[in-house]
Length: 211
Image (cartoon, rainbow, N blue to C red; front, side, top):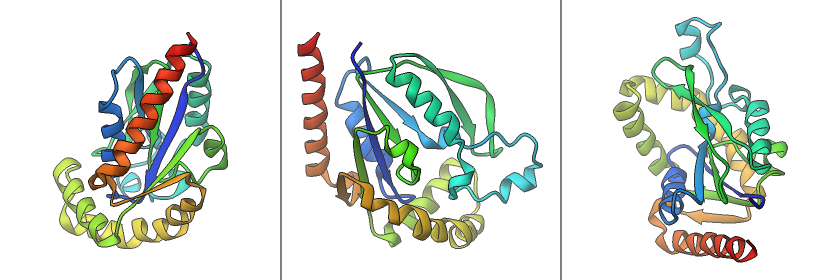
């Protein structure tokens, strides 16, 4: 198997980066493409109490186990299989079980801080930043956290104002300068997504022609 192409898709919380990643993923057979979520690589926190885990700043670079992420990306680049962690957002901790993840022709890495760490950036072949207005992003964040992560409205707003917004301004927004492509309005930008899908399909075709 030839070296996989790593595509990084980033942007602020609620920007639509997951929608873009899934649109690209669904455009190809599963045998050719896979997605790794940076959220899976939140640090193991079994040594902390639940209250301490609740109060962790999950939008700060130090919340992620980038050492493990980089180790796994390097293995995938070599064509090896990894045991991808599973993170439980209700307990704020990594689960004991993992998911077997095989190397593919195209691997998408999706997350808010994937361009913040130079070590991660240097492994990516294509770097995409999904840029969406802050008011849209915060509404999406509220809806998602209440619906999918068992949060209350008050807790989501408090977290956004105390950690999410400051971290976005300090770490996420500045990482935009490292992007090869900036996609405005995330999942609603069908033209940009179609162009990205066309590019990915051409990469797959080139790989198959070399076999």
